Amino acid sequence: MEGLGELWEAVMDDESTEARELVSEGVDPWRPLYGGWSPGRLSLAGPTPDLFTRPAGERGLTEAECATVREGRRLVAALGTFHHDGTGLACVAGIDAQEAVRRLAATPADPEDLDELLEDPYALDMDESLHIVGVTTVPGGCVVTQPWGYAPQMPGVLATLSAGTYAYGLYANPKSGNQGSVARDGHIEGSDLHPGGAPDRDDTPEEVLASYLYRYNAVAYACAYAGLRPTDARAVTGPPDTWVELPRRDHGAINRRGPAAPR
Image (cartoon, rainbow, N blue to C red; front, side):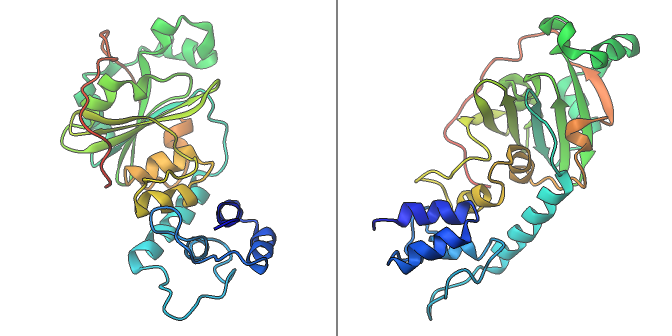
């Protein structure tokens, strides 16, 4: 239907006035578009759930979807707003910082080298700065962070961390935008993803809802994908629980299988 895409975008952007105008022009807000979601049903998860009159028989949000919406709002508020261009993350489900360090065979960062690095991360050679990452335990798992580089998202790092569990990797590339990866049980299942962006036609209902709740917020999307529930942004922005040095080996090797499966 003509105008349905525009209505979807208006709902995604919380443009209630534009959305109502499109409906007044005859666009049906309850026609499904992405992953079984219609603009009308998606609006029930937003700040104006009464945006459209819901027809008799049109289902509302399920209990599980309501819980997802509540957690999404809490997570976005907890993380707040901060500059994250150039940051690399690995959000790992079900393991704490100590276990992440053990899996990575990482060692404590040298205090003097760390002080120099933190003073100006970009003054050092990348071969040196990429080996230092922060690790922090959060409710639901842990976060491996590097505010100046992509190391946590390297395939070898993600694969190692995801043994027996799953992880979402993010690199906020200052030149090309947010880049996401999914690892599960030691294998890379998805790469070149776009966390915080618009949903795709073949997304699952859960992925469409996540795209709405975490639009323009790649960090929150990465945390939510891994089921992490941080109470603030410290795991991302620092200071982490511990700074460690990764072993000097090739972390770019890929162990890949199939597309990313829904959680």
